[in-house]
Length: 125
Image (cartoon, rainbow, N blue to C red; front, side, top):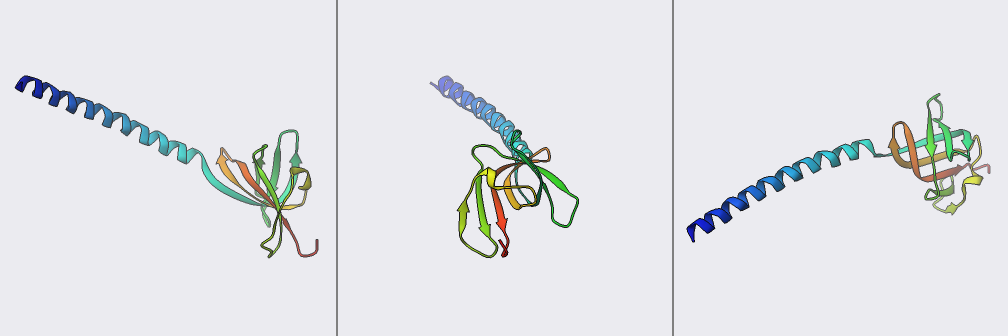
């Protein structure tokens, strides 16, 4: 009986050690994924749009810094008047060159994969 208890105890210790080692390897992988795919935001004026590649090139206002914004069928498109709480649903065809946009999504290798693109409307429009 004591041999069986001792064997059971040793087996439990070994199983616990192995499971701890497996979980220790999973955590760094999740951290790497979080660093690689981080949430982001970019705003500025559209300088080029390429519907064939589903991209917008957006230049930050007052700067020469440009970023590529990639969109797909899951991207939500909206427009909003400056200072207004009302948000209007639009589609990609309503965003043109020189429009001011705010894009939010996931950064990956310098490209923002947009989940939301908001066209900003000025008071004069």
